[in-house]
Image (cartoon, rainbow, N blue to C red):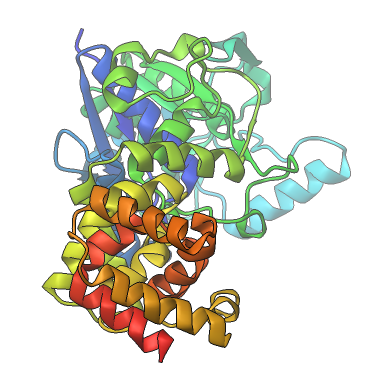
Length: 465
């Protein structure tokens, strides 16, 4: 058997971070077992599904490295097949026509509530002759669910779960207007796509019992089910905007690397010993469902940010330079090829201090931009005095003859401090303020070297006056 998993989002909005984790688990499980990972867009809710949401889902999955192995299947294009299976069940006597109006169904629910019973369909048309129905009444098709026994699911995460048949009514599989219901369409699609393992959130667990009845009625082999716990906010409540970012694209905008997000989501509800930093290649070798816990996970944004800083330090400098320059351009920072080269030269030092790409872009702005940087208030205080300006003017003269290699620049700065009888910091901090506009930056010798002699001198003298 070739393992085939699927991720099946509804395109009614952005891809939630919980959905991204579900997609990740499906992809990793398929890779671990040499199978395929597929995507189905469940767009049967035409009123709420949008083309923009589809694009956002596809973009989000591509950014995370979770694009499917085959072109996505769109559920809305399979309505004929869904109806075909519903009519097959009708022909086999496993389903029946039900002729209630919406008003009759509402009255049925109200009677059940008044009598203290669950609002289930009472089976009025289960054994009636359709000829008794009003001639102008369009029927729905309902599944003839078992009345006795129970439905049992051997869930790969939750363990064995079961529900008595008496607790499940005869659900509609095809509405009176000929459109399929969600629960029916999902079963038909999963069967036709050859899905062997359904890995999804545990909020779908109650749906699974009903879906298993359709599999059994058609005589189809059930897939294996694995229902993973949901992600909650840090306070244990349902994860929402008030907790912070919740959509995949928000995390991208905030400067997180996709590999860091995936690593964090992997460890959110799944464990493998004490390992925390698990690159994708290793995850594909070791992931399995027996490591998934049964309790809801809590989103920890601080932990994600820390993990992102680890991945930033490990990331390729050329890639980070491209990312940073794109963000700077988006901010309106003007730079040319020389500014881009300065950022590239400083990247090994810049990335050691940053936690996100947004932070990294902010730290790199002084190097990219043309001309003297905007000096913040703390840095301005360092260079405002006549003594500081005189020191910078003198330092510019001293450095004008220095060999412009990083190791030489560090040595010259130390010699200057020794000659003046001051600590290196008393020289480096005003110099840093003049060169970067800030009191924090990569090592000052690295800054000097990356800026180059001409740009560095221009910035020092612009502040020295």
